Length: 341
Image (cartoon, rainbow, N blue to C red; front, side, top):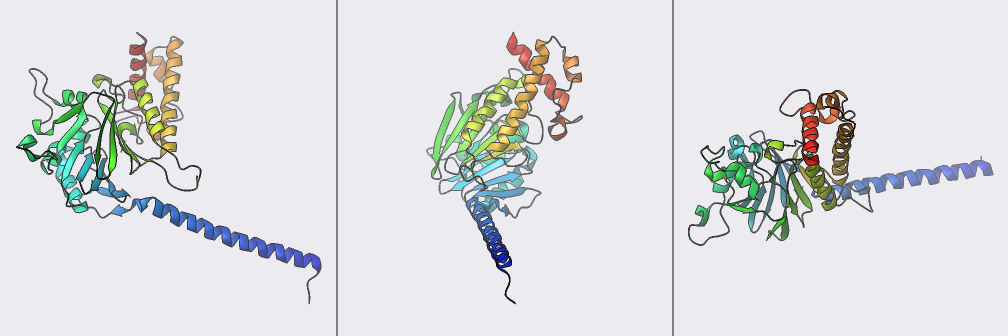
């Protein structure tokens, strides 16, 4: 029996819709595959010693589990490492890098003077080889680059022992806003961020790889640590996050792709620009709440009781441990009070 004209039209519409659905599904699958390939796959590399190694780009890796996150760029010129993890895991980190490439470590760049970022400096430096081969300069070890304030923090104050062995101290320092080099086929910018998490913070931008290593300026596991004893400040932290937002480029105009600049935090998951914007906005909102409360004449105890980190404490806060929600609120309070004087 031949369907009536109205039914034929309905069947035609259903067939067309089915084709569209199938086509959309195919396009979606194709787009998903393109995203996977375009990202360099972010593949997990077999690791040992309880370290996790993640390939972010064809020549760029993240090592996690040794303290602060460690970034590794490899190429014909050798290896550039950003942060070195803790001293106790340095041997495992060296072994992990040697599994990635036989090339020597050339540079270790420190994003701050935190022990979980610089503890492995000496071991990684000694496992490498400097680019400066004339004479016995640096004893042949890889260079350690950091902001000048990092050397001040790691060195020995007058009459006091150093918290780190001399072999872990930076061998190259700078105090200008920007230090740069060109290795492994790409420009590397080391960007100083004074008075953020500490007074010696830097971010490292690998321009061709399109990766920014942020250190503890960005810590997606908790509220940012504003280390006032070592020169940190809340407004400097927000300024650093704003600069990080400006450096990163999101996946536009094709927003369906999981592409764009990758941002490696000091701890936590790898981020994109949107993640950094959300984190920056959170920090700014808490800062503004505390600032408004100060303007209203409230004391620190009253401000703490008013829970200015509400809405974010469940995700980033803690009631115990080395950096609690109240520690963050107190640091914001004292930082704003100091800047208002």
